[in-house]
Each structure stands twice: as C-alpha cells, then as structure tokens.
Image (cartoon, rainbow, N blue to C red; front, side):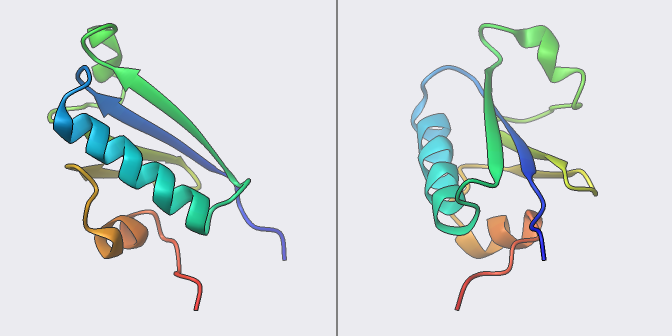
Length: 94
C-alpha cells in the first residue's frame, strides 16, 4: 500500500523562541513518522506578510497540512506530540 505524500506549511514570525521550537518539533515528528514522505515549507510572515491571507493565518506559529485532504491547521509550538500527530492524521508506529 502506497503512503500519501504530506505537504506542510509552517507559518512563523522571525526567529522567536516559539517559532524555533515549533520548527524543531515539527522536523522531529516528520523524520520519525513521515521519513521521505513530506515536503515542508517554512513561511516567515515578517518577510512575506501577504502570504498569511491565502491560508487565513490568524496566529503564529501555525502549521497547515495542505495535502492529503482534509486541510488542517495546528496553532502553537507543536510541543504536544499527540495533538500534532492526530491533527496530521498520522498513526504512531508501534
């Protein structure tokens, strides 16, 4: 059975502690559960604020799962691994 490819976007605002923590947590989860099956785009809204409108970003950091459907958003530093995996519809390896 072929696994789906995940397209993820992480919206941050500069290199704040919360943004850095969110990125580090996300990379760790992706490498553990999606190795080779994801693309991650990090969008700094201090550099490109106009990009927030497309995904209706109201808070940062925000992770947006574009593909596979359904589109999901997770707000915060992504430190709650269980919440992130459920939000991304990833079943942890046993």
